[in-house]
Amino acid sequence: MKKSLSVLLMVGVASFGWLPTAVSAAELRIGFVNAAKVLEEAPQAKEARDRLEKEFAPRDKELVSQQQELKKMEEKLARDGAILSETEQRKLEREILNTKREIKRAQDEFREDFNIRRNEEFGKLQRRVYEAIVALAKQEKYDVIISDGVLFASERVDMTDKVLERLRSEAKREASGKK
Image (cartoon, rainbow, N blue to C red; front, side):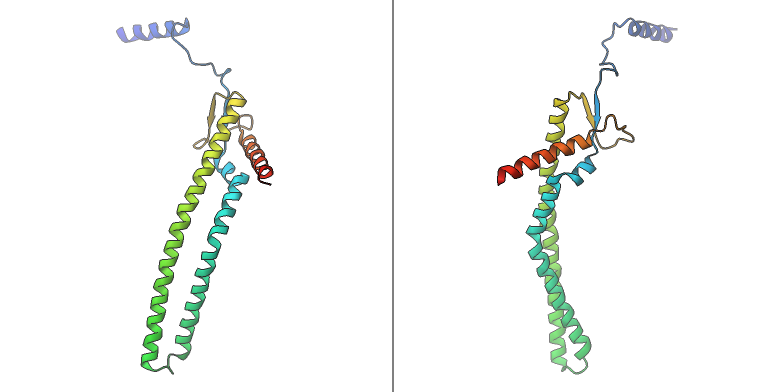
């Protein structure tokens, strides 16, 4: 009895508008941004990828060169192993083993350095995307912008292309300012 009375009281209060209410759904402006698409298609993302490639290409070429040298040594051992003296064969085997270790160490350092730089560039890009989304949301008077974890968003609320356009405009301004 007490429970049903309190429920009736709550319903009555709510129906008379005595409880503070949130902004009605008709007044709420919601937008959706596909962050993965923005991070893939933004010109700043391409610039970041290009910077990383330019920075790490020489080291990558050096690793490929070392691997080719190792392959030549292994081929020589396979081809000439039977005719080499025991001392020469052991020397070549040690040289192959040392080269493999050096290559593995260099690959590990390369991977670690690349991941650190990629995370730095990705962090900068994420900040730029966030700033573009917030600026666009304020400019167009959105109340809520949602992103990851959305199961469905209609075209009406999807502002991904607007965010990309804003980032493209910023990239063009920056490019014209650099010249």
